[in-house]
Image (cartoon, rainbow over all chains, first blue to last red; front, side):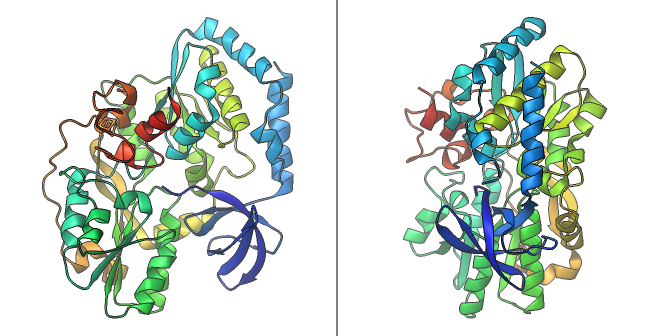
Length: 72
Length: 364
Ligand code: SF4
């Protein structure tokens, strides 16, 4: 139906934000994202950011999978 | 960006596959179900099914919101589209789903004069309503918990703007009651679940703990890249081998145990759970959302006093069984012969996330 894609916030104006992904710019809503700021990565679904993603969490996620792999 | 490459191009795939193979010597043949249409497509596109050990079977469940919308609702909407000065908006896929008559869908109705517009976001539907005060704009709100908070935000926006020519036909569905109903059905035969990452991003990974707590079934909340899928399948296989069902969160870069509490609050502010009909699963208590009385002005059901007719399922289409994971798309006698994405008989072939469309595009 609608794919969710990760986008990077460029600027914020009220409940809306301009985001970029793969060279495409789009205006989305950030109604339910706490403390969103330019530079943040958000997962966007049907025109709304559903959650923020931090580099720290991506690294933790990466480590989790590495751990599983090392346990093999 | 955010370690994308690692998840997209996992290293040492052969080690993971070898471990899976070893585990299947303990488990025997197993069936894992994905319950998210985006997973169905991601699995098909990645070609993972072709490299997994033969004893691991991946099957699609009721995870495509367009596919689980029953025929009588589509018929009701087709009827609604006949009204003058009424414009129907929704996500593109839904507009192509046929009602009880094949090839009768909203896009065809548009060609014969009805007002129908595809939108990317419900906010676009609001914009159309603002610029066309002479039209009644109806947004067909399908989707699961991922789409629910955005739909709620739109209803609040319409209320804030006092936009009286806009309403939402709420067809939103809740995952948990549907899964419980599927698991409790007599033909249920699944050993573990790949849980929907973007639903969990909203309602939290904890929302899926009932799988292991109440049914002793393992679940892994998974991301959508090949690396995510491989690790999640490995985790499921290993929990099955060890007889230690639990709920794990593989997609921790996006999914928190409590999800996005602001989004959940928004859902609860605007909607309440209500019984709902699913294609393939039937009538399930508390499995849908309805708009609260406070926002009745923006509720299409109430605004136009709508009542769907009794269901007249298309007898030739096997979507209902495909959605339950009891029938594979390629076994359908209509598959490829009569039913194709260009000429779909059922919603599983229409939707980009449908199991039949995925099989059509990627299976030989
Ligand atoms: S192939 Fe077509 S007719 Fe057969 S189950 Fe899928 S959508 Fe229905």
